[in-house]
Image (tube, rainbow, N blue to C red):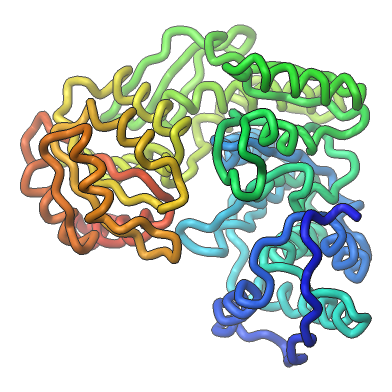
Length: 453
């Protein structure tokens, strides 16, 4: 058996008529209540068999890692679109809306389309439970929906992001990806993936398939590098490491919202995703495109340039306003905090930086604070609206170990108001980070306050 956990036998969910758009949220709440997180491939295999194993008809690029997966997926998809490929993109989790997880050539699935796809998935789930099988989890349903939707939309290539893992992630049902991509690997989701970096790397490397090429961000930890090398050797898979040091002359133009760098063989490139950590992600996307060329897919250098220039993944060092300068970033673990800190040091040291921070209790928030707070001018803490949120007042007490100007705000709106009282100084900027869970609310507050779309 591939599952780490065996589900408890439950009564089948009551059969329903065609799902309506307004019922989708309630449907997923019911799924989460009944299943939670169960790692393993048994259930998704049975579900996809009920759906005709349509995933086997799709050409896929499979992306795993701890940080950077969504950005790399976005970059690869953008390059493919510029090359004239009809591309489907599946990412998780949803930050600004569930529909963003499913895109064809950059266009999100509509709520009507999604409800229709879910109805087909739910019928398959009912057939499973009628046979005495457990109902698939919410993530398995989401993943099956991606496969079915992209199949029905006749996508030529699908860029597929794993959930939290690799080997036992529902997306790993795919047998022969065109390319497997591994972004940076670090400590996160230890409850499910393992308590050591080695254990986590082994799980992530589980997406490596027999004879399928692998592109990987160059690990900083020798033990992770060795694990990736051994996994690829065992599967006779070509391994290409991507080192951010291959990029030269990195520079920022905040007014144009652009990061520029030079890469051998391609020349000067521009990114509108401005975190310095995006350079390594871009190199992963470039090397993936080069492998696709060897497989007969026509991708010109100009498609790579245009694709990277147009690629945008909201919530990753996203500039929401330039006057005043307001940025949000999804950094939510220690490794992401280190990358965010490097970005600030490389291009934003001329600003007094005001932080808005909200975190989840099960993250290594103290290490994040230790890394980030030396660069802050002022700090405001909040409590994200999330079941696993850390109380913002407790976060403030923790932050006071590393900074002497920390204020707890009972609401995100109050944090924004307090920030704006200080950020209007021409040499100040605001940065919100710590958890993806509150960025949607932040964006909505800023839209109203700054009157932008």
